[in-house]
Figure 1 (cartoon, rainbow, N blue to C red):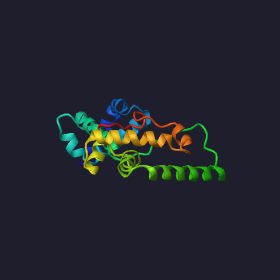
Figure 2: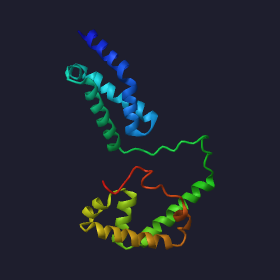
Figure 3: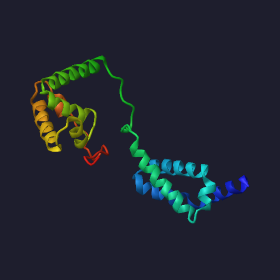
Length: 182
């Protein structure tokens, strides 16, 4: 009986692979992630193939698994990938010293902020909490979080020595896959 189920599964994969990968591509927008997502969903389908095969529409069942696996991808904290054509050069001692100095200036600038503004900046931009989450933690309104963040960022931009940090390119919220609607 097990051999028959495996044969059904293999036939299903052969017949539906390209369609499932296309669906996954539309979900992810990336061909490599689409193949990974399809493989993950099919691996889960294999583990429960007896139940999947008994369903009225196994393809719909697996497609739902695909959507669920895609949603699961966003629940895990992901590190942004930065692909380059050549490996980066080794950091020189001067680069490391410069980063330590920049960090020291940043820490001093944060220490110069009033406690509430510092808390908003740290939770919002360092801990990456949404405005609503910061408001809950601080026991204030979302509007207060927004105004405190605005004031704090204005002070940080004017802090001596932070010019290099403030002028550095910042990732846009859209490219980082983040939004305020968490």
